[in-house]
Image (tube, rainbow, N blue to C red; front, side, top):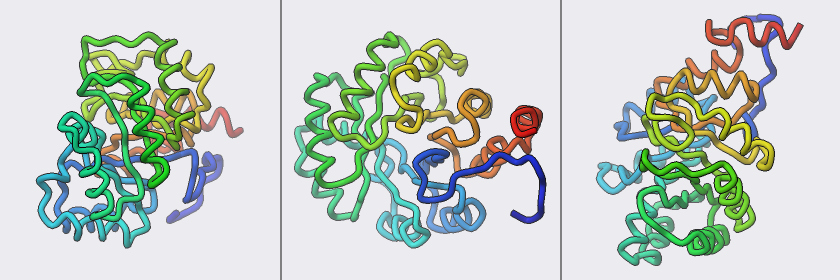
Amino acid sequence: MNYELSNIPERTSKPRQTGYTMVMDKGLSIREAEDFLSVAGQYVDIVKLGWATSYVTPNLKEKLAIYRDAGIPTYFGGTLFEAFIIRKQFEDYLRVLDKFDMTFAEVSDGSLEMPHEEKCEYIRKLASKVTVLSEVGSKDDQKIIPPYKWIALMQAELDAGAWKVIGEAREGGNVGLFRSTGEVRSGLVEEILTKIPFEKIIWEAPQKAQQVWFIKLLGSNVNVGNIAPNEVIPLETIRLGLRGDTFDHFLKTTK
């Protein structure tokens, strides 16, 4: 840090299991990725190339190398996995992971209907090759999954070999964990936490108010995802109680 302040919450350090920040790259250029990392790289744990943007991104290998050289792993969004699965091209998907030296993969079913045991089987197959992040929740804002089912799905996917499970919100933060207004489904989150360890969950929380809510509930070292590149530094100040939204929160807990 650039100077000293007392009563600052302690942050975990990389490589970390909690306090994880997952950033969504929706199509940064190589220069933009370099600029982003020059400012925020130390606060970024992993970068997701959103949905299937990797299919159309120019100079993909070069951009992935920039993240790799910075010590930040990357993965392709779960929608790309689904695009291969619905076309019955799972083996082709594996070849894509190999071609681009991907060490992480996301398994999701937010855009297609898939029997859950089939999804878990894909997790098991992939977990023998890469670190798997599995996403729970639908991208359909009309599909409401009850809390008991969220818990059962998350636990089954962890048991199948997922390293962490991701709570769905999309890049807009208006489905899954959230109402269409962006408001957190607080009862859902709190019920999930009665059964699933908080360190095993990455909560997609692209909106500032959502980040604040999770940090106030679970502390500075909550795992959050779908963070925009230009929101990483602001998020870190929220984690540390250095923005008005959490300014008093950590002073009370650290006195």
